Length: 306
Image (tube, rainbow, N blue to C red; front, side, top):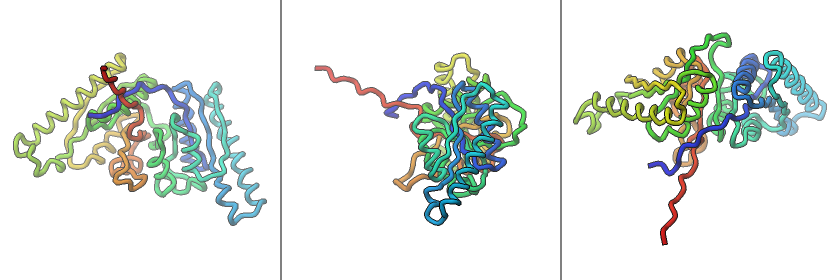
């Protein structure tokens, strides 16, 4: 049994990394819309990485990099304010690399938004070490903006769930749906290949495993309804041979895909599971990855009676 209990999430500020690429501009506007929905400030961050550049660049070059960064931030803010004139917007020109800068600005509360690929300080974002580092190492939710900018809304948010341990971050998915006035779909994938050779397969077959999964997801849906009674929550279990493939397909029919990011294994350092990795590369909609333990608090220890 988990030693943590879910906590109803409060709307968080939104932090977005920009680098001048079309994908980053799209991400900035998407982040602005997200901040506007939450009625929270938007923080524009450009990581100029001048501390590292200073080792091989002269002062004139560093100054030019910083000036270009300021112009980029100013231009992006203008584009945001054109669409969201009442939004509170801050700008930060960082001296460090993008992963460290975004993690620092996000702290332990804000939501980080990144584009699906980038330039400069965000080189090969989500195809190389920078984007993957942000998604894998951040202590806060990270949203990777994917899909066409003019993609029509579906009125739904999808949470990729497995079991009761997902309840903490699942409330964050519920909050995302609530602020969008959308429904929440709990999608759980029963991969039949994972049951081959198990005792459960021999005793009651895959139908029994599927029934148990349905019961677990329905129980999660009921718990979410207790926290968000006005939210439409629908549980759904799908069986297949590839979890990632089913979730990628489902992403074509939702406005946001939310999933928990697994814990690090054996102290091996930051990493993303295969399913999360596939989603941030191939999903048809934005993907929100929530770190393990986010949205929960330690359960109080009962006092001993004297």
